[in-house]
Every structure is written in structure tokens, then in C-alpha cells.
Image 1: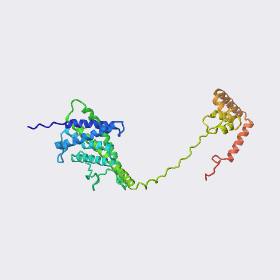
Image 2: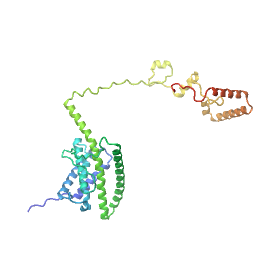
Image 3: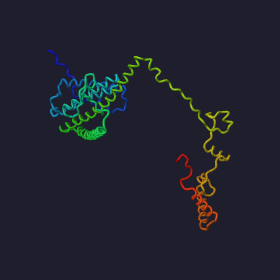
Image 4: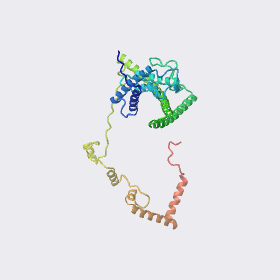
Length: 357
């Protein structure tokens, strides 16, 4: 009598392991190329392939049945092609171009499965075995040469998709909390998995759109590498090295001319002026003049340094101005008349109008 074959892991247990790996990769903060992350992704690919093989052997899904005919506990297994596409797209240990084309095939397989079960009405078209688009192009990106009306329609469609995505995320969060309870109703389970399938439809569309943008770049890079291998000497002198500019020598203020002649202007060990020292010397030799406030004989610096004295000076100034006005001081009257005459001959806004005509 032949021995019965040993049973392997159950499909439900295998899916739980796959889902844990997905959550780790999707939420981890470590770099994607990190060995630990890539090891997880490798195991995710292996387990997904095994789970897909098991679902095919069990014939869980077919083209001639509807979503209502699928048991609630089996709805989650429809995600396996999408999860396999996710892990394949995140792999960095192989050549990039074949990987992204393979990932696109898995994503489109998932969308086609959801279309058959009427989870979505999106028709992604057919894809060749080599990963190339057939005549029924599945590209989700907007074609070139679109008119303004079509662009506005596409923009409105994206806004509507974004709104639905946010609503699904909110509902998914509520359903997830209900699924955590000890007893869950069958309707809640079914809505939870159905909403999850719709979420992944949106995610797969985004991933395919990203892949369709990445593939032409990767193909161009592959062509450039092939050209360089064929003609290695033609590309050597395309970008001649740039001339290195001499570094700018720093300029500092030295104490006197003798110090500059001995040490040079940029010698780092030479004591330099502070701004206050430089300003004080320029005041002493008469190069600079302290700015005045127009009130008394105090400069602006003196007023800032002695606010109490400045207040007294200001009060004296205002008192003197009032006295001149009340007594009709002849000098003050003459000054105002001259100022009025000057304003008659110099209208406001005149001044230097060079290059303004």
C-alpha cells in the first residue's frame, strides 16, 4: 500500500505569511535595497508563486462565475497576482527592465481577474507573452496631442478617482476595526474583502502607469549601454573635463599697511578689526560722521545709548519749537518761507529722472 503524500501548508496559512511580509515591506523605513528588506521580498515572491499554484490546482476562480458565487473567505486569494506584482516590482537583485515588465503582467492579470468578476469595469487590454503591449494598448497615461477638452476631462476623472480612493480608505479603516472583534458578521467580512479588492484595483492602475513611464527610460539606457559596448572609443571625449577655477582668496581688513605688507591680506593668524573698531577709527580720522537725529546735538548712537538724556533733549526741542511758533520767531518764519518757495520751484516727484523717459 502506497504512503499518503504529506500535506503542505494550508493556503490560508500561506496567505497570512504573505500578508505579513507585504505589511513589513510596505511600511518599513529601511532602504529598499537593504539586504533584510530584499530577503523579505524574495520570500514574498516565492510564497506568492506557491500560493498561486495552489489556487490553480484548487480551481478557486473561473471565467464563467460571478463574485457572488465566491465564498467570502476565498475573496482574499484574488489578491495573489497583485501581491506577486508588488514583490516583483520592489526587487532590486536582478536586471530592472525584465522585472518591471514581469510586474506589469502580474498587475494586469489581477485587473483582468477583477474585470471578469465585475469588481471593476476597467479593461486593460491584452498583453503579449514578451510583455509588450498589443494593438489594444493598455497604457493608462494620457496620450500626446490631447485637446483642452480631453485634458479637462482627464483631470476631472483623476479628481474623482482621488475622492473615491479617500472614501475607500476611510471605509476600510472602519471595516478593519470591525474585523478585529471576536465575532464578525458575514456581511462585514464580505464588504471588507470586496473593498480591499477595489483598493488594489486603484493601486495596480497607479503601478502600471508608473511602469509605463519607467520602461521607455530603461529601454533608452539599455540602448545607450549597447552602443557604448559596440563603439567604446566614440564616447570618451564627448564631455571634456571642466577647467578648475582658482579659489578666491579671502579678503580681511588689517590693522595697518605695514601688517598687510608683512603678512598679506588673507593670513589667518593676523588679528582683524571688528566692525566697531573699524567704525571708531573712521570716526576719529574724520572719514565718517555720526548720523544725527535732527533733535538737539545728539547723534542717533548717543540717543540709543542714553535714552533718558535723549528724552530730555526731545522735550527741550519740542518746547523750543512751540515757542518759536507762538512768538512768530523771525528766523523760523524766514526758514518756512524759503522752504515754501523751494517747494514751488521743485514739485514733488521731480528729482533725478535719468533713464525714466
